[in-house]
Length: 106
Image (tube, rainbow, N blue to C red; front, side):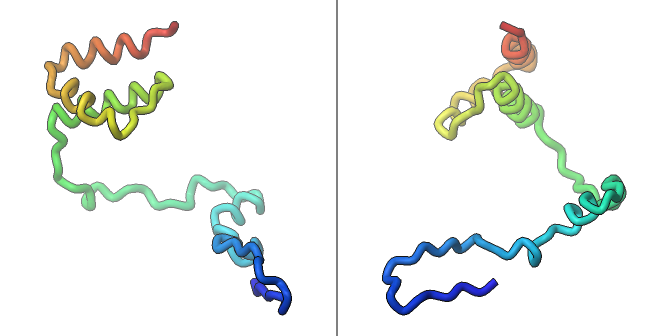
């Protein structure tokens, strides 16, 4: 894609993210538009390449609380991090109760 400017255009809008669609077709999108099945585009995960990192129970509760809040329509804000960290430090039974309350339909 080539952008040319006229000699008398002092203010021209330039979109740095503009691209020629013919040059930027993602292979998976091209396969989908061609009617091919998309289930075999990614190889299955290799268990030997998994990381041996355990997530602490507190981190598991923190992630679960983030997910529950987001699903409940209350996406956590950056300033909520301290409160979520404090709630995640509470026992698992309290965290489970909080999640149950958030999952309860109104």
